[in-house]
Length: 96
Image (cartoon, rainbow, N blue to C red; front, side, top):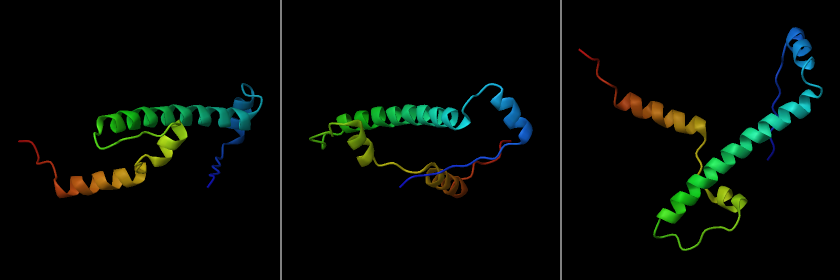
C-alpha cells in the first residue's frame, strides 16, 4: 500500500517558498523520507531492545525491514484513543 499526501498553500506562501526551494516536490519528499528514516531507526532500536530482553525469543530477524515488518506497532490514532478511554475511566480528582 502506498500513501499520497497533498497539501495546499497560498500563492503568497508558494512565492516565498520558491524563492528558497528550486524543486518543491523533491524538497518535501526528502524531508518526509528523512523523518521517516529517523522514526524507523527509533522503532528498530526499541524493537531490538524488546526482543533481546525477552527470554522466550530464540531468534531475531536479520534485517531492519524484517524487524519492522514483525514489530507489534500500534497507530498513533489507536494509541491516543486508548489513552483517552483510560483517562475517562480514571479521571484525575480536582485538587483542593
